[in-house]
Image: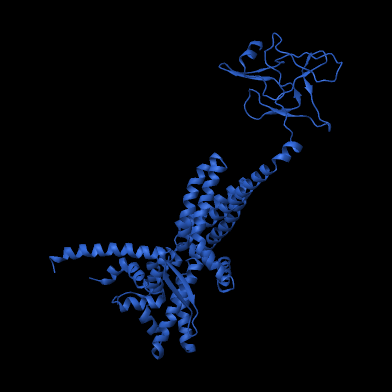
Length: 107
Length: 375
């Protein structure tokens, strides 16, 4: 099964999750996702997701000037973002449990 | 990064920007801030191995990058630039100026409290045509964005983004959702407060559009043609409401002066008698400046009151049979012999008139049962 198809539905959740402990700029988020094991995540998808979450009011952003290279826009989770993370996290967990149960017989 | 790398990265970014050019300028700016620095960073990581091909191998073509980003961000997919066919530029220009005129007319119409109806109507029709064109013809909004006029506006915004005002702009942007809510409330409130029934019918859908169009315009520029005029309209309405409330409060604060100096209380009716106690009819009253002492009189005919200085005014009787206007004087008086300068005293009922006490303060004795016997 192509994981990129699965990823589409949960990329929001994954991005919110990696921003939970620490603010990060786009590339940061991308690295954290990949380090966490989501190798297949596309660069542009992560940036697009960040924009969508930001436009939905779940993230706030601030710019940190950088001496070498371009300045970086950091994203951080705000209260609605945290609430969404908990809500979506619970949905995911129960969904995953359901699917595990279904697969229990197969595997 | 060497110059060669710089040029290649810049080329990549330019193509990416072009592929996003139909999105709102602010969004494009934000994306390019984010994803642009990402591309630069990836290029730096490649170091000596950098080439346009290596960059494309790592990130995909700029168009593919833009496409993937649009999909993830929930922006509408880009339309093929050729899809508008001929006359695209003319239509695009029409849409652009319909938007400009729509914003101006919506504001002027609301701020003036509903004047210039014909012009506003004409502009509104043009605006609706523009909206229909934009939503009907894929890619038209992109053509509008490519107009020199639109690029000029976009550059002005981009300029402001980089200037000292950037902080203020960023702050204002955080207030945007609040503004969408506020303008919806203003329109709804105006619908009820102004009490124009035709407007109330319009106010409800307008309120819904005011709420919806704001967030949508962030992602899909076609919604600007709805969001911006509504915003201008709400702003104008706000001024009208503010003006109405302010005038009202001011009027109430100045009531004491107004009552005693400017508009004295007139009695509802005046009866005049000569020295023999004979009632005079068809008298015309004037004050010391020769100004007619007019008071409003509501006859049986509904609508505007008749305001003149002719007294006494007919009494209006309303009963089960309808409404009648009755001429004459409902009471009689006895004028005392002029030995003193005391004011005339009135007597009680004199047949066949009604037994009502004469009064210069209360309403005309029009609704009493006994009066009807005289009429």
